[in-house]
Amino acid sequence: MFSPLTPLDWKRRAVKYYPEKTAVIDEKKEFTYKEFGNRADRLSAALTEAGIQEGDHVAVMLPNTHYMLECFYGICQLGAVMVPLNYRLTAKDLEYIINHSDAKMLIVDEEFTKPIEEIQSQLSLEEIIIVAVEGQESSLTGPDYENFLADVPADYKLPEVKIDENQLLTLNYTSGTTSNPKGVMLTHRSNYLNAANFMHHMRVDHDDVYLHTLPMFHANGWGGVWAITAAGATHVCLRKVDPPLILDLFEEKKITLLCGAPTVINMLVNEPKAKEVTITTSPRMATAGSPPAAALIGKAQDILGLNMIHVYGLTETSPFILYNEWKKEFDSKTADEQATIKARQGIELAFNGETKVIHQDGEEVRWDGNELGEIITRGNVVMEGYYKDPEKTNAAIKDGWFYTGDLAVTHPDGFIEIRDRAKDLIISGGENISSTEVEGVLYKHSDILEVAVIAIPDEKWGEVPLAIIVLQSDAKLTEEDVITYCRAHMAHFKAPKAVKFVEELPKTATGKLQKYRLRELFWEGSRKVN
Image 1 (cartoon, helix red, strand yellow):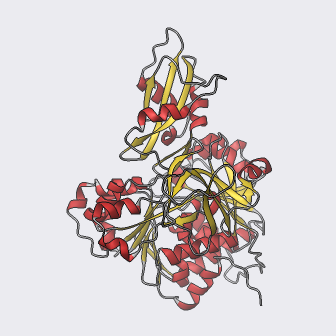
Image 2 (cartoon, helix red, strand yellow):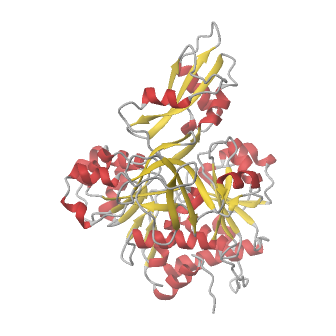
Image 3 (cartoon, helix red, strand yellow):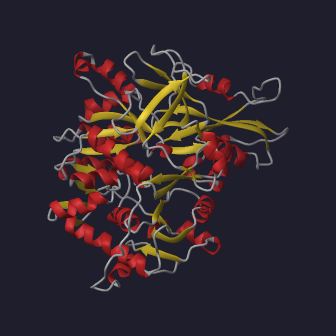
């Protein structure tokens, strides 16, 4: 009587009970659940014809389109593993990830083929499928996605696959704090339970209309790619974040739910059109990444009428492990007090397992809002480990607990609030940036003697990289020179947004760089969080 926990079963359910319900809206295209299910099944059949079998890895580099949604279901229901790729990465990063992931095939949007063209000869791929985009051209050779599906025989039958809930569903790469990305192994079970948390705590129901503002490649859209289907709700695709368009879609499509980094919130509240539109659906919006400032939450609620829900997690935890639970007693507080509460990471979700803040000795911190410790977690949503990297896996998971590297306090009501990062990871606009990676690029510049890269607060992006540089004697670099150099050698979003030149960097007696002293200079009067 055992039935494995897999989010793929939700497609079966949606097609069974809501065949004529609108499943996906993608610009001018719409698909019912029956049509969407058929397209996902045809993709599965086409992949089978192309030789993709259970356990094979398929990389996908697509924006938030119906094609991306189809890939999550069409690839994974074969028992194959989907490898979602961040299309903002450099060719070098993509080469590493594609080869390291053992991907046999790549499905790529034509707009994002340029970096693949640069590295195609170095890739171990057997085939590349291209999603055609009007106005875009590519030198890549490979079948067109629609033709790939159309070539499937009319009488196709999908192979019978017995899913083990503990087998891999997706392999999601995160930059962490090292230069080489790490492959996070997420199972059918962890994705299922994370999506169940998404449904329950985001209050997803059948009549919801969900706008995909959050990139689906980010930890599988935080679970939204599964949870919306589970409820038989409607997915509204969004190729790129366009604030005026988003504001129009709120009313045009009657959007009731969305997710996004604080950067997206900031873009929306500062869009001139925000003061002109009337949003009648009071959309719920989950936010995470760099935690939003209380003032930003206040603006989102006052200007746009958004009902903000703060969540917290990591790719390694599928990703949710905390959410900001709203209680009736908070309703009587002032708007500023409410925004301050909503800026906290919150408490455990119903299905994820246990999360707490501990001292180095393993004891839990006092629930006083002051005692600092590290957030650790265990349970149903924690990754299986880092792909082909047992050393990093063992460093992150100790005695059955995953160590997040985030320093936090626990308030008397149990709400956890991040105060700093043990690691020097920079989260800018929801994107992870490794400070050591940026430093490594800068150290290659002949005019630079020493460099430290830290996060500094930024109104738009939450936080951005600052490069603090000691120049070689007689060198005459400018801030613009440094930023231009970085943008030429890495993904643009990773490049420093500001540069400061100093005579020396603070170090311990043994020569170890003291980054915390640098951060103190730039975060004075503003608490460094997440």
